[in-house]
Length: 375
Ligand SMILES: NC(=O)c1ccc[n+]([C@@H]2O[C@H](COP(=O)([O-])OP(=O)(O)OC[C@H]3O[C@@H](n4cnc5c(N)ncnc54)[C@H](O)[C@@H]3O)[C@@H](O)[C@H]2O)c1
Ligand SMILES: [Fe+2]
Image (tube, rainbow, N blue to C red; front, side, top):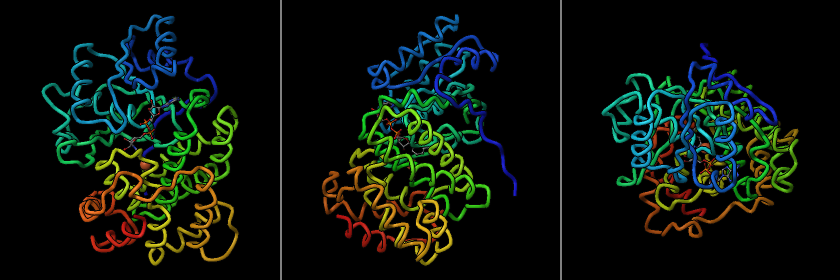
């Protein structure tokens, strides 16, 4: 078993104050901060700018990134990065700016390349070095070198990435999540939970990913409800952030599965937030996977505090208990899915590369049945 260490982790309340030191440790004095307008409005991007400015780090803030970033946004960001020149890219935000920043850093190192070439960029030249500063406890995107971006014409998610843009340093500062609205805490927390559960059952799982995933599920199960009830609880925010990071470490080794395959398709067709799309089908996919994932479900159930019984049933019951108060699970028709879209969603889910890593390989007809069940 070969395990590549992922990034250096700087974890703790206030860690963001050390950003200038991290930039200089990577051999640079300049930084392009890639973020979004929500982080500007929340005062987090301006604060990062002030921290960099007061330490004499020349920087620009690029906030032209939306939720579920598009290829066009990556291209615009790359144009900005090329104009700014050699620099560290600081990815500041939830999964959307983190993913976008990786694509931008990669394109900046490859003049002439565009986000539409994503599939051909996996062995391109190196991108700019990336420091990731997550401000949601969800995607774990700070642990890997790829981003999920939307090809708006084909209405599908594409993966853009390269080993060189895997963040060199992940700055995990739970204070940055204190002001996260509760609906975003819920959606991003469920994303992290699904990373842990899918990682345990994935075809690519191994003892190392299982170790990360199991502790991730324990931390998320214990602390997501607390952080959701009281967003100002720093202890809960810190534990949840660490849990989401461990889930990211797990998925980076093992890959994910069908919950994400379907979730990507729902989001690409409706714009539904990633975690909300996952919540819509999580319980049904766990049930579908049961014949191929008994041991993994037993691990997940134990991590969620269920001590005995059938692992699949216990996992579904624990997931239901956890997600109920989060008010996140909605039928597909409430997420903007029209009934006649279901066959197309099933086709897209089966074709998403992530689905190949599911413990049980679904047919389009099986996914269609599953979608009809949650419609
Ligand atoms: N690369 C990976 O490994 C990976 C894994 C899972 C998901 N993803 C991708 O990540 C994206 C979703 O990321 P996300 O769920 O973190 O949401 P997001 O980045 O889209 O953020 C959601 C909203 O929350 C706001 N926000 C973020 N942090 C805040 C804070 N601290 N205070 C106030 N507001 C804040 C943002 O401005 C935004 O409006 C999707 O595009 C998904 O495909 C990537
Ligand atoms: Fe996810």
